[in-house]
Length: 110
Ligand code: FES
Image (cartoon, rainbow, N blue to C red; front, side, top):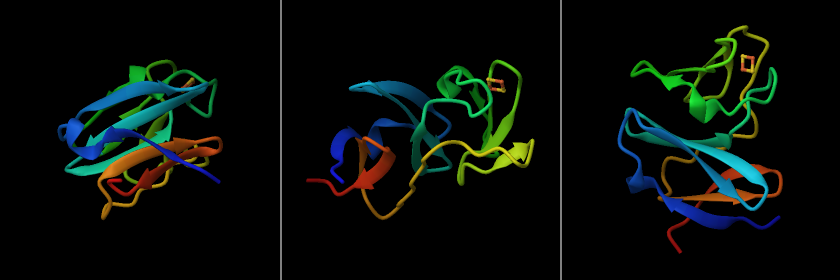
């Protein structure tokens, strides 16, 4: 499976998130207290872009449409707990963010 670099981790400030388009994949990049994560930018409920929601300093990511909530550090659902943000793959020791056909993953700098 191949991944390619799409952003620098340093391009996101703590508390910031943004959605980007990588080929046909919507990718959500966010920074929670210095930990940068990448997920599919799609709410599991109805597919609305999670980048349109809000990110609290506590790490709670809230979808703008029906207010489902996720732990932005893990992708696990907070409300409802059975939900899960799609295909995130955090790896804090790396410094680049990559995206591939089945989701998002960290990459090394080069
Ligand atoms: S689309 Fe996200 S909560 Fe409904």
